[in-house]
Image 1 (cartoon, helix red, strand yellow):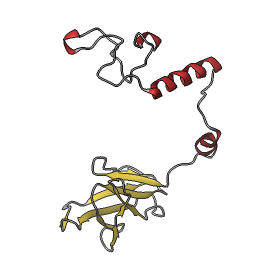
Image 2 (cartoon, rainbow, N blue to C red):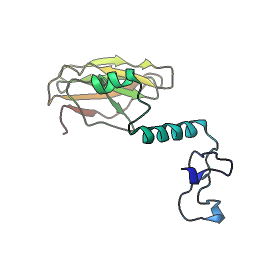
Image 3 (cartoon, rainbow, N blue to C red):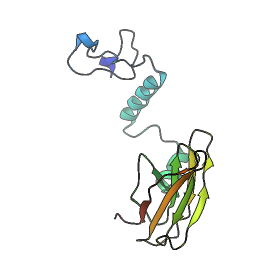
Length: 168
């Protein structure tokens, strides 16, 4: 990393680390169109150097270690998005559907013998979420759902399926 800094010792966000391509302004050891300097790049370098010196990861706050390593805390949700359509989720998780517009999710866990509608909640960061109570469903259960878009007054026109606890 030290060899890839600027003459003044600044660390770029991204460096070109192979043969020069001067016609594209890509020079080994120089920024590859990224920002320089970035304070976080310097901070990460210092943390890396300290970790190597101490022989252990330096930046491990005790609260984070306790929560995620000692207690093995995990999210109660399994996420489904239009750009990441999960086909299966672990048993015991709630299915969280994330959308970019206000949805109403029409869903069933008994092959449409019965169904429920759940309105989306605005996260205020350009995303809506709908949490389906799938955490008590048994392994092998299938959740089927579709989406109604109230702002445009239209249905998605597709039924989606998510299996609980195993892949299809």
